[in-house]
Every structure is written in structure tokens, then in C-alpha cells.
Image (tube, rainbow, N blue to C red; front, side, top):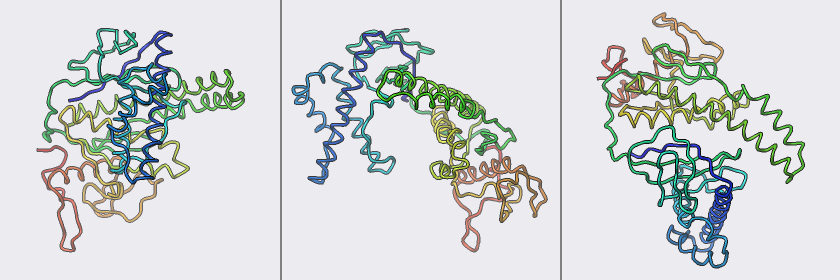
Length: 386
């Protein structure tokens, strides 16, 4: 399996200068290749292949001598990145590739000539860079991606191949349903409610103050750049706090359960609600589900997503009776059929768990009218699998 480990690195002043040149050259070549590919497609109906982009480098290095300063393999990786971007676009996984900007996150990749030994990360032309290693994984180092955040921090993402096959997914064990929320971040089918730290709200006043100071600075001045870094550091603090919370919560759920069922939320559509957009964006539900998915694959666990249109909140998980209307402000309700009193969020988590187990059990059961229903309460696929 391939696993990436991200470390903080501390380059010297000379190494920072070379990294800045490398970031600029890679960014320029990427934008040049993207523009040339787009113009070629408009003229001929065909774009440039990966080899066509790589073959542009010898002539460009003669015309622009500064392209020879960064490691050559970093420029060659541009062809791979651009090809992947177009592939994601044509397969409708992403939008059309955009031009890279200087003020955004910068990154370059080293596929060869790399070595991580203790606290020293060896990179082509840069030499040894001090790396704060929290843990040294086993396996072969495949590539290193060096990035710089807008706040000026440097990181190295080391990709390792541990030489082991991905463990087969198993369904023997405890199953759990997870319902996402705002007041409580995650509500599980066993009745546990995990609080939402709301880190953006916590630092919102400080961020607004730094942004106000930035808006008062003269454009292209040194003071404006200093103010920009202060704003970026607040954003970086929020991001790191959120990632730390999501990593710990996702690891806890994966370690304690064998089958994890979540709802396939359309976050992009949900943020169109201007009253909840900031809170939804602060929650990071998409990132959380991504963490659950890859961590479950690493441990041989089963990860299932239930369709977003499944009425988990309106369906009684005891008798499967569905209520007609359930406003958001109604947090507790009583089923008219079985008289069971429900906590809205816990009931939704239980319904999501049962729906995921039904999908795992082998498809849909159909009524005489042709409508799809879930198995009755007596089915063996409830709570635990197997």
C-alpha cells in the first residue's frame, strides 16, 4: 500500500531561495503548458500529451536560462500533474484546470534522488534539509512533495510503499451509523454524540481584526505583505486545529467499529443556504468522510455511503414508519405507529446504519407495488454483521 506522511521542514536561507526559484519555474511552466494545450485544442481539436509537454523543456531551457536552476525532475513532473488534471476533468471529477497563482500554496515533487535519514531529508540540488520527523515508517520512499503554505511554512509529504497488500475488507464485527450535524458534529447509532469544536467561530473575531488591518495597507507594500502573512497564520491555525480534531475522531470510529455507514452529503449544494453556509464549511464533513474511507481501507474495515435522499430522520428505525413532515427545529418526535420516542439525530444514525447493512446484505427487497423497502426488524443484519 502507498501511504503519505507529512513532516515540517526547516530549510536554510539559501535553500529557501532555491525553493522559491523552483516554485516559480514550476508554476510558470505549468501555466505555459496549460495555455499551449488549450490553444492547441482550439486549433486542432486535440490537446498535448504528456510526452509532448516534456519535449518542450529542451527548447524552453535554451530560450529561458533560468529554467535550468531548479531540479529538472520537478519540471518533468508538471507534465504528469497536468495530464492528471485533464484526466480528472474529462472523467467529470473536477473542473477545467486553472492557472497557478503566486499567492496560493506552492509545491514541487521530487521522484528521484531522495532520502530520509533521521532528521535529515536529502533532496536534489538542495542537499540535506532539517526535517522534524514524528515517526519513521517502514518501506520504500517513492517521492517527496515539498510545499509552502501562504504563511511561509514548509512541509514535506513523503510517499512510502510498505510492500504489503491491502487487507481484505471484512464485515465480521460491530456496525455503526454516523449522522453529521452542526450542534453536535457526529451522532452515532450507539447513542454517542461528539461535540462540534467550531474552530472558525472560535478565531472569527481575531481573523476579522487581522483582515481589517490588511485592507488598510497599501497594495504591493512590505507592510501589506506582513499583514497578509498574519492573516494566513490565523487561517493556518484554524486548518490545523480542524484537521487534528477530524483525524482523532475518524481514528476512534475506525478502531472501534468494523462497518462504518455514513450519509453521502452534497456539501456543495448545502452551502447555498446562506444561513448555514459558514457553519457547514467550518465542519469539514467531506474531509471527515475521506479520512474515514482511507483509514477503513488501511485496517480492512468496511466503509459504506448511503444515498443522500434516503429519509433517515423521518423514518422510525424500530417499525420503519415514515412521517410526512419533520421540521429542523423539532429535535424529538414520537412515532405514531409504535409510539417510540425518538431523538432525531440518534434515530437518523440508526436508520443510516440499517440502510447500510441492507445494502451490504445484498441489495433491495421489493414490494408488490414495485417500491424498494428495507428488510424488516427481524432480519439478521442489525447491529452486528455476520
